[in-house]
Amino acid sequence: MTRHFLSLLDFTPKELRALIERAMTLKAILRRREPHEYLRGRSLALIFEKSSTRTRVSFEAGITQLGGNSMFLAPAELQLGRGEPLEDTARVISRMVDAIVIRTHEHAKITAFAAHSQVPVINALTDRYHPCQLLADIQTYFELKGDIAGRRAAWVGDGNNVCHSWINAARQFGFTLRVATPPGYEPSADVVADAGDHVHLTHSPQDAVAEADVVITDTWASMGQESEKDVRAQAFRGFCVDDALMERARNDAIFMHCLPAYRGLEVSAGVIDGQRSAVWDEAENRLHAQKALLEFLLN
Ligand code: CP
Ligand code: NVA
Image (cartoon, rainbow, N blue to C red; front, side):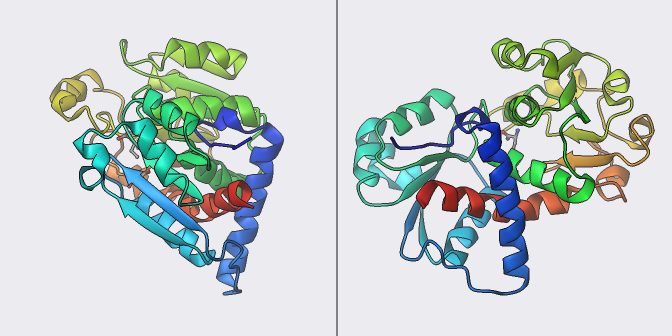
């Protein structure tokens, strides 16, 4: 059976932990400049319906370092953009390449694509989840602070795709996540319900971050929500992660953000550019974690 990576729930906790270990090993191998062309001659197709800096560059650089190649396919240039059914596109492309990375809006689109693909499909972000981001984020936590099991994480901001993947991570890696959102911006009830005791919702950023080991936020207006930007900026007043809020977390707490970030809105410049910020490690680890993912799915 073809394995896909559409959410963190597609892998077992044991598989996810092995991936994180492997990502750290691949990072060390790259640092030593040792050849590691474990996917020589393999091809990766990337279909992105939304903008991307980190995800695209990390997948393209990653497969190249592993000895394979990538092709970036803008939907407007594919027959998909002219109305060829998604299912037909999946059948055709998956007969030619070894894995397909997709960034799109509706999560149902990627599940439909995967159902008709002969090769692994990787979720590079949908409106519902961003699982690749979480591989890098958990790797970063392990590197900076050790095992995240039993620890306390705090999400401050929008209950969005990245938040949903943090909720899944809390289940899969065994930690607690407190999520603070304004009323009306909570994560989806089904994602929360499935996580049981691992997740707690509040409308108070101060309560969420109390004694947290890691504080996380993301943009208040995700891709596709550009027209809601001003309304959201109003609704999220008081949710900026600044020094005063970080003071309530543990002394050694770190700050995470998937990027791109908007200084002065969801995070202050002092926090994202300060001592506790792990954002550049997170961004770099996209490369290492996704190389481990490709190796796992393709070998
Ligand atoms: N964090 C993230 O996925 O960034 P990009 O949108 O630049 O890929
Ligand atoms: N929540 C953001 C994440 C970007 C990487 C978005 O979906 O736009």
